[in-house]
Image 1 (cartoon, rainbow, N blue to C red):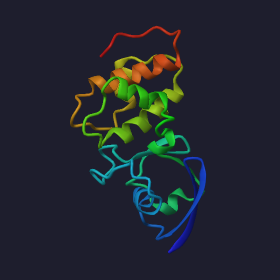
Image 2: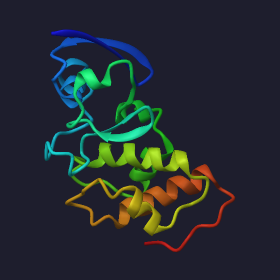
Image 3: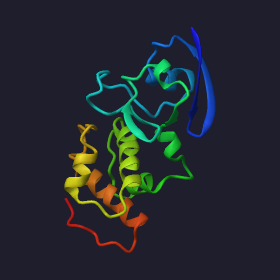
Image 4: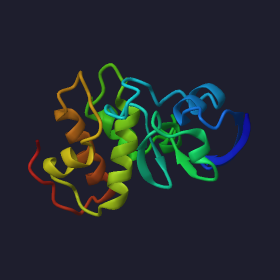
Length: 164
């Protein structure tokens, strides 16, 4: 057991756990942040995506000891009702969720992507940015539209590219 410190969603947090426990399990079991989901457990689906120092990672592949003293953002840190982020609002507006299992990971990845661009991205750019996130329900069309809608809200004076 080890005392591990990190900043999660803007707050200093400490957990006592084995350093080999996955970050995903620490977030869900020790900190009660259940938006990130375990699906594949191999880093292939993106359902557990979080940001570590603003970089998208699969939290099922990161050990708690590796996250020590890092800045972690989960979907809860992107926004919670009633203070949703523009990407979360756009997912709702565009009906980009179905079962919702993959949605938190996609939202985290989309947030990181939109924080890096200053234009309304094309469908191809969004597909590339979200390539590590799998959704088995939506067919991606509404997800791509939601990311473009969020970008158009962030950059209202920019031209909208052709839809997916």
